[in-house]
Structure formats: C-alpha cells, structure tokens
Length: 142
Image (cartoon, rainbow, N blue to C red):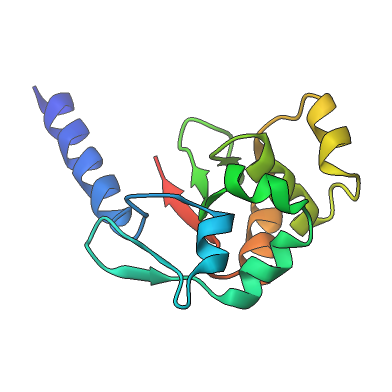
C-alpha cells in the first residue's frame, strides 16, 4: 500500500516537473515559415522558438528534409538509465541534429542514416546542445 502511494506521488511530481514540455512537435519547415514560431506547452503556455536557432539547424539539412524534422527536440533524463545519461526523443534526423550540435559528427545526413546510433548522450553534451540552440532543445524527466 505504501509503495503504491509513493509511486503515485513520484508520478505526480514528474508530471509537474514536465509542465514545460510541448504538447506538439512541429516541422522545421513550418516553423521557418512562421513570423513568430512557437509550440504550446502542457501548461498551455507558448514556447517561443528563435529564428536564429531554426536557421542554424536548417544548415545541417537539405531543404527537402525540413518537413521530416520535428521540433523542439526533447532530451529525457530517465531515472532508469545511469546517472548523467539523457535519451534523445524523436527519430534519426533529430538525433543527427543533436550529434551535429555537440560535435559527434560532421558527416552528411545520408551517411549518418546508414549507421546505427544509440539515442543517448552525456549530461555535458546535453547542456552543450541546449546552450547552442536554447529554444529548440528541452530537458524532460521520466
């Protein structure tokens, strides 16, 4: 009984900590076309996205890939993983953007897609990504 109560309290705390996460993820293409790009968050606030951040990552990809990239990118700090490890949510294109931001790769997207890449990064790398594109990378908790 006590374990169930603790689990409930824990899950409610995690949910509250994640109020800032987006309720939607939008394509790079759509966000670049908007005058004031944003997504809505779980607490019904606008998360504004900086044009300069969008323009920076758009240089990593050909424009025919922009529709397939969903933003913002969420880095999850999972309690089930080792301390200091974050998982990159999204697909291989979002992982590619993170790898480019943190300097793990300089290769073209097509070459990157040929290899298997684990969707995990270390805490210092997570904060490097956040620092480079503050409006496009969001930390969440599970």
